[in-house]
Image 1 (cartoon, helix red, strand yellow):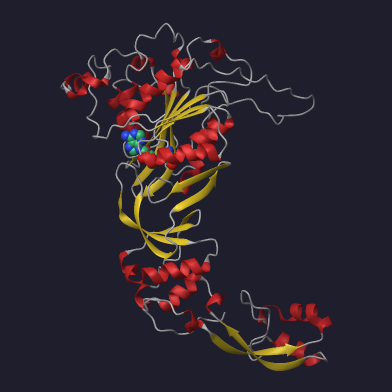
Image 2 (spheres, rainbow, N blue to C red; image 1 turned 135 degrees about the vertical axis):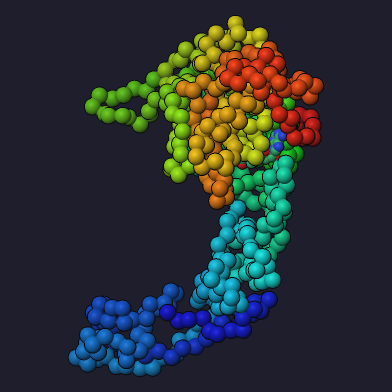
Length: 487
Ligand SMILES: C[S@@+](CC[C@H](N)C(=O)[O-])C[C@H]1O[C@@H](n2cnc3c(N)ncnc32)[C@H](O)[C@@H]1O
């Protein structure tokens, strides 16, 4: 390896020319016809440097075998050669280690996450004096990047985007990314986007059948909503952030999605009711399920596999498990019983606001009050809810999450419909999960709804233990701005 030259450490701006260096190497001049033979004979004695064609650096250090080979072969001459390399020769990590102060090079910050052409870094305090130099090196060494930013500590607590400062390149925060076969345009400085969630986005979308109606309560710029619509689902998607709402509209056009995606800009709690009302008012009926696949004789499995069974049965995925795919969808490849119900509402609600989505679950209480006749088979007709959350408990996170959900909803989840899926670790003692469960009939048809929360005390909830409180009072949710639906 040619080491980077010794340069003055601790510079605040990058001087590329400092890296230009010349090394003297020994070379063998050989007839072209002997190339393969020589390469084989010299093996690891040859100079192996990225971007540099092989030469021999020093016969002194060569093995006896190589020295013998050179001596024996006529036509080989040893020459001296000069090799000049520059800044381009070394990786970002090598450059940073050469140039940052000695005491902070052990964890030289050469890793970053990308969103389209933007690289975002999380620089520790000790690297901040050198942030522009670090940004420049990252830009130089990654030709697909045009912008390098550093995430500051503060996050917009409601809309979940980070404050960022430009380290190098263009101040252009409008990125374009691809995920799940869809294109997304977004302003990274004003909306939430996390490429690390792509597996979770795909997992849920895979769970939906093309004939399902899906309600995404905190949709961001649409990473669940767009692919689900493209799949054929009827999707109602909402985000409180007006900028996310605008990008959802734009991304709908970008992905050529037509009428099966309705977009709202409301508080999630209001949206849940509004979406259910609007879907019903629209006269929505489940599209007929596709005919069962024709399985040719002699072919096992076949390409067009039937949809997964209708109810999840698993209870818990422990934190360290690899992500699992749940089978929760309600329709199947043959005309299903669900197709024949006259009342049709959403098959799935998605609530990805892990810091507080559980607080919004009281909106489901009494959501279908008085509709028992329309919903004769609640276990088939009531929606599945997929609610993201955090848990700091490494032992029994399923119990922790389930109890918090039940406390907010004021009733019990039906054991056989509950599944907790581990999504990712967000901090050493904090994991993100998605709890999926079918909305229980006792909560859906409840006659005491959460609007009373502001005026009533909570004794029944605390006292009731395992029974449903007669007057349910959930925790006071955080104050959120109210906005009108712009649709
Ligand atoms: C963690 S992000 C997830 C966005 C998207 N589902 C995704 O997976 O990328 C949470 C989203 O909830 C939105 N949000 C925050 N408070 C909300 C509320 N009260 N009602 C609806 N959306 C809200 C934020 O603007 C943000 O886009």
